[in-house]
Image (cartoon, rainbow, N blue to C red; front, top):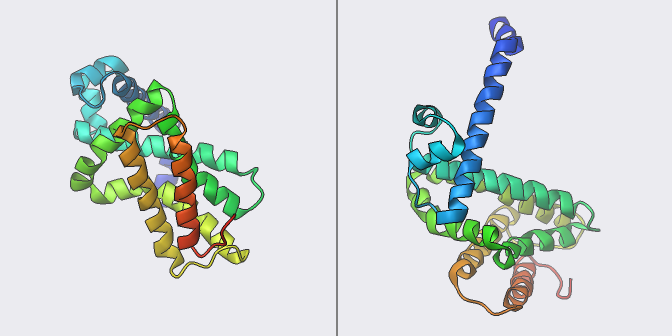
Length: 216
């Protein structure tokens, strides 16, 4: 960083500008979530701007399109969830317990309230369309969960609890499997208690695939 850049970084005006930008983006992301709760992704940029209390030109200052906003919503929701899961799992006794928590907690939203149901269906119905347009950006948005799983797989290997053939690839594949199950049950009708059974079966499969001992 040059001395000119350092001076700019220290500028109070720059800091205020950044805070204002962050506030406006936060308003638009929160507004998008509110609209998603009500109607999925079937809203216009005009509706989004009105809900957020910003001018339409302000929206286009930060997002090139509605789909870019939806990508940001998915990334924001993922980061928020990963932070929450990581904080909760910190109290668990070992990396295998934390890994099980991460793998099964993704499905908890399917048994949640109407807000959780709306967000689940939005993610499932929108993800593949966004994947076609923004494959690299979507992978980056979803990377926090992959990193979370990979860290515990690595820790479990070091503790002698897992022995996967290819830790890097297997960690990624586990997250893809979890996503597939999540996508299926987001729309599929299921009985009370069925998700709990699915979570246990999913964990048993992942544990075996990663070279873990049954019963953990």
